Each structure stands twice: as C-alpha cells, then as structure tokens.
Image (tube, rainbow, N blue to C red; front, side, top):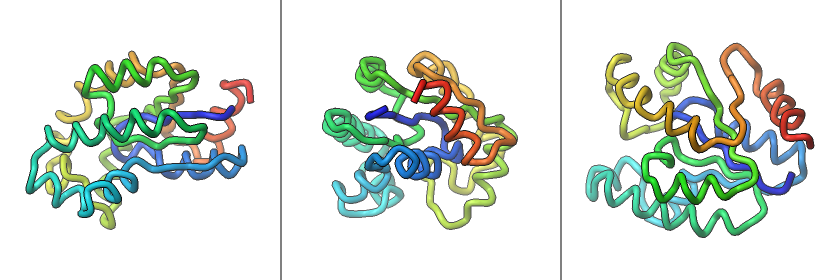
Length: 168
C-alpha cells in the first residue's frame, strides 16, 4: 500500500487516520489543509473571507493534481469531492477511502473541536452543518473505492480495518 487517499466530511478523522496509517505503513503523510495554507500564505478562513469558495476550490484542484503524483498517504479536505474534476482524478487512484461517520457524531466532533477554523461550519447550527454534509454523502460514496465506518471506533481500529480491507 503505497498511496492512500482519505476522503470524508470535516471531523471524520482524515488527518488523524492519515498520520496513524502513515506510521503503520512507513509512508509519508500530507494533509491538504497544510498544503493549501502553505500555497496561499494565509489561513483557509482568511482566504475564504477574501477570495470566496470558488477560488479556494480552484487551488484545491491544482494541489490535488500535484499531490496525487506522489506515493504517500493523503488526507484531503472535506469538500474535495464537490468538483467533478476532482472526483475523476480520485477515481483513477487505486485506494480512495471514505471515512464515513454518523451525522450526529460529526456534529459532536465539530462542536468539540474548538481549536480549528472550518469556514463552512464555523458558527453554524447542527441543522446548517448537516445541510452542508448531506449532499456530499453520495459524492463521497461514488468516489471511494473503500468505505470505512468510523462511528464508535478508535483511530487504531479504523487504521487496522483499512489495512485489512485493502489487503496490506
């Protein structure tokens, strides 16, 4: 297992699982948020505020195309599946894992994560967050080659499940 791309909504655990999976497989790991911040030279929230979501999604696609060329574990952003171009790029990859999480659990995780700024859910009600999440579910499912349910599992259990299901 040389390349794994993790997709899923904010709070699904992509960064945590990506780091642990990289350690377990002796691979390098990149987190999309970190790559984007390095590229744009500001926080994602500031970029959204100044340039809007459409400009952000263009940068996200450019970085995706570059990042997929390398053998590594990739934790994508929650909205990576919104653009058809991104979904097509991802579908060409051998292992795209959708970290599927129960909506109520996502709300709990997002509300508990006070240290991060997530432009599309900051100061939103649970209903508003779910309104962002629900339309993405079929896009995640269509794009993934492997779906792993994360609700009520530890990060270590999730990593082991990915390794087993991927035949690593």
